[in-house]
Each structure stands twice: as C-alpha cells, then as structure tokens.
Length: 287
Image 1: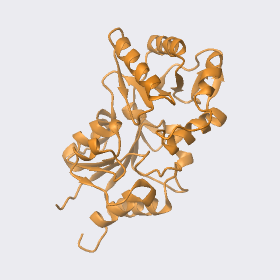
Image 2: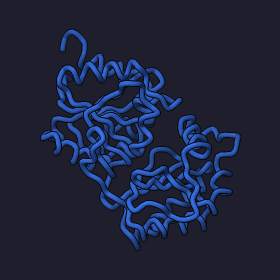
Image 3: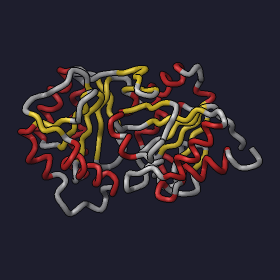
Image 4: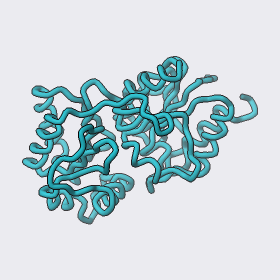
C-alpha cells in the first residue's frame, strides 16, 4: 500500500529510542531528509519535555513535540498547549502512594521532577539490584538515572502546574495493586492513566492522551488526522495509533499492538527500525 502522509508522529521509548535510551544518528538523518522533503515530523512521547534533550543526537530537530502523553505540546521552546494536574489530586495521590509504598516521580512544569524526602527510603528500594527479568533495560536504566541524578528530593510539593505522575514497581503484583487503587480514586477525582510497560503507570489530567495531544498539534499546523501516520510500540500509544490514518507498530511491540495497526516495522528499536522503515517507505527512488 502506498502512503503519502503529510505528518509523521514518532513515539520515543521502544520506538526511536533503543534500549540504551538513545536516538541514533541514522534516525536523525532520516528525519532530516523527510523534513527537507516537506513532511512534518513530530515526537509523541510519554516523557516530559525536559527529558528529551539528553536522549537525542546533537542537532536533532522535529517540527513539534507532544509530551507527557498529551499533556503539553511544544513547537521549538514555545508551548502551544498545556494541561495541568490539579493540586488536590496531586496531594491525594502522594498520600495514597505513601500508604502503598509505590515509587513515584511528580513532574512540575519548568522544574526537575520531585519526590518527597520522607518517601525516599521505599522509593530507592524499588530500584535495588537485581533487575527483574520482566523489567525492560531502558526502564531500569531510567529509574537508576532518576534516583541518582534527576529527582529533586523535597520536603513539600513545589511548583504550581504539573504535567504527570510516573509510578514504577519491580513487582507486577505491586504495580497492579496500585493500578486498582488509582481506579478507585478515579471515582472521586477524574483523571487519565496510561501504561507503557508491565511495571509502570502514569497519571495525566482527565480526558488527555497522545491522541488528544496530536489533534491539538495537527490543528496548530492546519493538518488533519487523515494526513497523519504514527509509529509506536506500547499501550500508551494505542490512542495515537487508532487516531491516525496509517498506523505502524515496532517489531519489538507486543502482539496486542501489532494486531490493531496497518503495518509492522521489519527491524526493532535496537536495529534502527524506524529509520529503515521510513527510508524504505519515503526515501527510496520509487517515491
């Protein structure tokens, strides 16, 4: 099937990021060529905007970035839309996370992610070796980096606007128990949850996901979802993959994702699967 989208949305973890949490030079070069041809290329990620710079090669550029699973969208350094978690929800979730001893990171806009100092002991305990086999290498490395370098340990909540919560547990039973707790809380305060692995869950504002973020980004560029394609690999990509006209799953995606898309890449995220797919589709001589 020949496809000629005007806009391409790319997930990061498990998609353009390899399992060492890096975007290759090859992927950057392919994105540059597509943009030079007049296509719009965007990132649509669960990561917050401040996390991206350290993961991409020097000179990496896209037309826009949808971050925190649709909570904010940026063109260059300018936020073109932004949602925030209400403070009462933030406070209640931290209280319940403490009661359940769940690892959490809260992402205030414009500040480092935070965890309250009183919760540090059990949070750090979640990333003690050995790494469980079922935890992805990239997720484990990200949590190690967060504990050692990224988290700002504070005595009280700082910031006024918050892009998301990220929760993690080494044990599937532990994180699944926490997901049930969040579902109970939803009956009291409305919000959205998103999952990108068997060991995590994220919290965003109500009625927000990657698809809603993409719709706002497309509107800004006077494009429609019928002119868009997307590539992803996990459950938090499902709203995005269902929205766009043409959807692609990574070879390393679970079967549940592959079953709902139009195509699957020939190579994994560790084999530059996105770069090779886009090159074959859009940069070969026949196009």
